[in-house]
Image 1 (cartoon, rainbow, N blue to C red):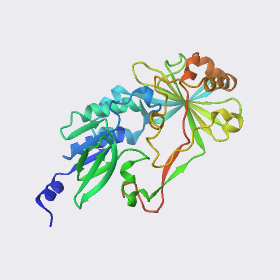
Image 2: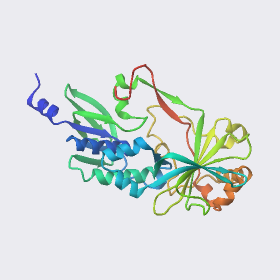
Image 3: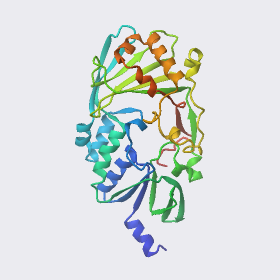
Image 4: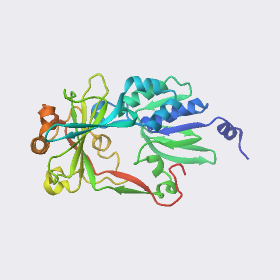
Length: 332
């Protein structure tokens, strides 16, 4: 028979959400709207800065619908950039072909989206955001409750725990019945990221640019996305297939990460762009500059800023979680 405390937990659940990224913060807002208390646990002591998260992202119809359901769409629209086109940029001539999108997207940097959502979350009476210590592990206290151990040694009790802490989730790894449902898969591709402090004069901000090298022997392409912050710049991601290494062995990515190793490498595990206090190795920046000059001449001339190559970082190969059993879902 359930005790009074257990009955209270069932009637008034407290949800701990591991991870204060866009998914975790948005979920806390949605729970608030149905009267459920939640605590968002985030390792980072301060909201993301641009230098620590490289990529831009574009929300489509489903993403915007989720923001609307949470009451965040208006604030997000004011902060982001409408993306109405995909621009295909000829790396040799500089000619551009525009492909309109059927449904315009909404472009953000990850930190900006987190900032927009967290501002809304902090006004929700049932949402608490706890920063500065991530989730270490989760244990079952009894049939009705869980204990969430944090990296600073503190413990939070909860009726439910949600792992919004990414593919290296400590929540998932805390339960063999969950962790054994997935296998980490590694793709034969990786990325090189660079930041340009300004948007080239010839570039528009209402779309994402795709730039292919002039030679078919180059097994990579560039995605260039204008950033929506007030100090607009350009996020440049070089998407490389492993065949790229046959011609450019100096682009070799770091060794693949294994489950359990996440966090041991410091900022190199967490960030996909170089922190502002770090610059790329001189040999990497020099080699990239020459590659751009040779294979992307029009794009290189449009950039007109050799300092961009000092921001270059080669990331690990892409990984993703594969479900091992048919009929298993991420919510099982």
